[in-house]
Length: 505
Image 1 (cartoon, helix red, strand yellow):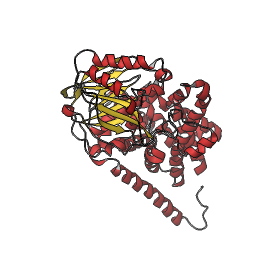
Image 2 (tube, helix red, strand yellow; image 1 turned 30 degrees about the horizontal axis):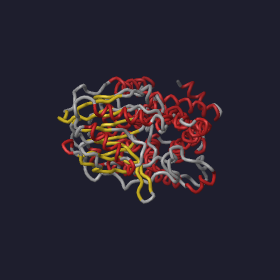
Image 3 (cartoon, helix red, strand yellow; image 1 turned 135 degrees about the horizontal axis):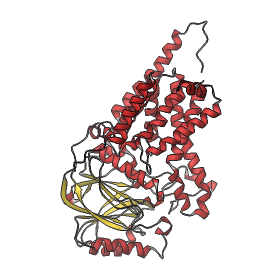
Image 4 (cartoon, helix red, strand yellow; image 1 turned 120 degrees about the horizontal axis):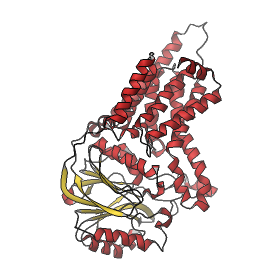
């Protein structure tokens, strides 16, 4: 081990960069479709190793960039899928999108390693810096916390740290564990720690005990409309009739949920279809996704229907997907001739006012989430009151047929664990599922299959610590740690003798 470390330390920077890319890519095995949680330790432990061999602040940044690029490029391969919907027009953009996304996200990790190297190369600084990098990634430029390392933990007992600490506190714990593995000097202790962490992450399962169920039954409708066909006039009746048939089948549930943009019409033109849907529901309320227009502004919306087909509640998606649902700096991209992939109207969608609770009668109150909104833990925490359940409508046909929908489901499980609330999700092509407050999937429909699912709604759990505190304690803790790193650097420089050589930058 010592010989290998010496070889890596003395290797040219290009060889170190290649090793960093490989270590980052190995971390992708922690996420769907592989779900080998312990693999997330590879890039995290490697970050400390790379810090120890970095010869300068710039070298640390390059190695952090390489580590992150390998990790994000391998984990987010599904990013190419939206560009293949209209491959003749946008297919050429796919590799560039994956490259730019991976490198852009890696800048946060590069900054973390650079800061840690600048402050003296201390393990504790990198723990705070990597956690801070993931915090910034969740918030900055509207945020994109997809593939955050804690996402790898949802399948096991370790994932329940999320209920106490949320994604950022869990990141701090996970990174500290990786730093501890790196910091111990005895090889047998390192091995023992890795074995123990592997057992916690991958061997110890969630308790098998079932969560209490309510008396209410929800029906999740999954039409399985491929994105290439979803807006095809010849195929639209097929998918609408399929959803109507699923709504009308069997016993009458207490709630029927259709996925995001389930109807291809604007809301003010959809009343005939809404009447048919209400008849099929036989008195049960229906929730469905639809687009709407108001005063020249377009919204990606969710509506609830009563037994007569009248719209009783409307929720407008407020956290929109950059470049998919709206164009940042539209005037610039319009001049460059670049169009949003999912744009149906000039300028894209308008964001709604924010989180909103819906009254679902005997089922209680629901916090609606449309697609991408389930990725943001802090958005759910911003709700005005605690709901009885979370309700996600999504169209994961954009994400392809493998890792994208599975990773999106894992994030829905994170939100359930963090809040101690059940979550129901209706997905166009899957995976539609009922998730209990412990993050366990109690019922689901397979990916890329048409059908419907009837399941009892789990009862809400007790409020979690994270649901009470949110991110603020962890933000303050990380800020304190980073301020401490800066002060430590300043005190070290003051203590440096005048005639001594300055520390390497």
